[in-house]
Length: 145
Image 1 (cartoon, rainbow, N blue to C red):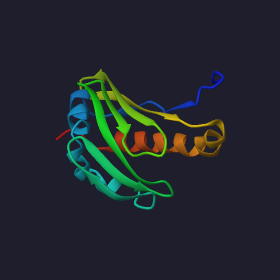
Image 2 (image 1 turned 30 degrees about the vertical axis):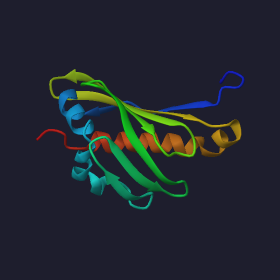
Image 3 (image 1 turned 180 degrees about the horizontal axis):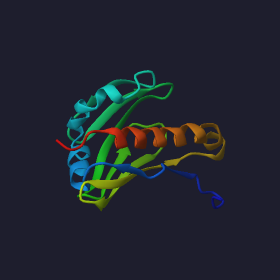
Image 4 (image 1 turned 135 degrees about the vertical axis):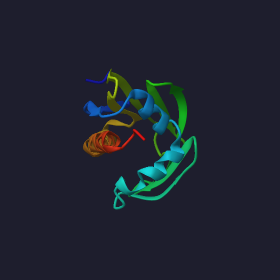
């Protein structure tokens, strides 16, 4: 249970196994220009106006509007952290990867968002579904060339 006055919600995906090395996963995900390789896997009914460059990705999410995620920290072969630049609430997202074999790794997506208790109760299920869906998408990407 949250401490009194703590408005931070943390949502973690299930751990997913990926048939690729953590090097390949990191190399692909640490340069957001690579989104062009997976754009067709992103659900068009939920996300519109997808734009990206090396460090940022902007999307329009119904009913929130446009949100831009910017890579704020890269730890090679381990973690890529994002912060939401123009989100209506403070939001951070990170992707963790851990090698399990030469051509296999585990990944997990975590989202940390500051919401008051009323909003958290309203959107908690959707945020959990979003991190789980993102982890599923990331696990299905063909990382190896």
